[in-house]
Image (cartoon, rainbow, N blue to C red):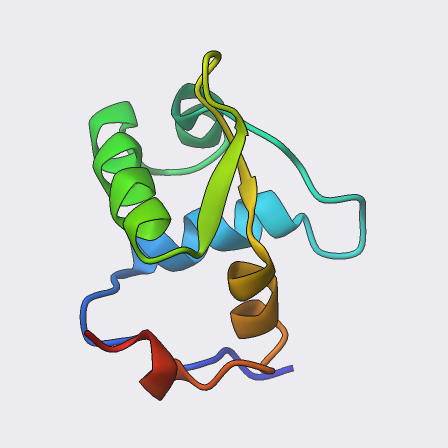
Length: 91
């Protein structure tokens, strides 16, 4: 399956975060920015700032806000599955 084109504001970090939460072929994950960073090639600071931007754009949401745990939102799932056009993510 071909990768979906990123929105103009997105970088490979954003895609990697979304795909890590999606956990393709397995059950979706709920993770903190620290755990995402530990399981990727990105620094914790990079992941943290991108997580905030992804949440502002409704692609991820809190699973547990107090613990800082995130999960994919319906919008994030739809984009990863190709059901939400990338144009709809533009500001």
